[in-house]
Amino acid sequence: MPVIEESPVDSLVVNRVLVKKGQRRLYLMNGEEIVRSYRISLGDNPEGHKLYEGDERTPEGDYTLDWRNSGSDFYKSIHISYPSAKDREMAESWGLDPGGSIMIHGLPNGAGDMAFAYTGLDWTNGCIAVNNQEMDEIWQLVNDGTPIRIIP
Image 1 (cartoon, rainbow, N blue to C red):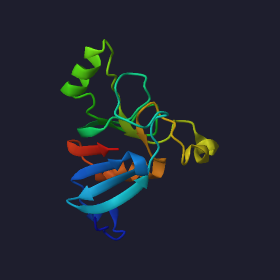
Image 2 (cartoon, rainbow, N blue to C red; image 1 turned 90 degrees about the horizontal axis):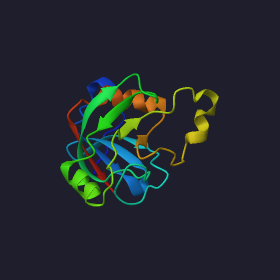
Image 3 (cartoon, rainbow, N blue to C red; image 1 turned 60 degrees about the horizontal axis):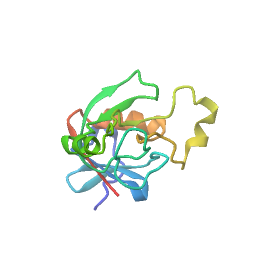
């Protein structure tokens, strides 16, 4: 995948998001070109697809970034459309709740001087986290309705 050189944010077009969990990377894409790349933190139990609420896994598959919350418990958040109908069906077949509220978000509100402590750690309950500066950039570049693919 070719990488677009650092361009001013207002000139970039993002039409999909790609997350590679094993690499701990989130890519903002324009077609096959990488517009931006970010180091991410995942859930405390990052390997495998999210199966049920509380498993601390980040889902895998194709979803949509469908709404945003500027007043979340974390510095801004964009919702991932998990669970899909298939996710619900799978969890319910085991008598479990698939969970929800899977987001791309910044650091916990009030992290302040401890923000550095989150770098490089998997600390979420299944969400995808970046630092607050990166969240501002993602917030600006990614529109509601943008597809997101999350792969192992």
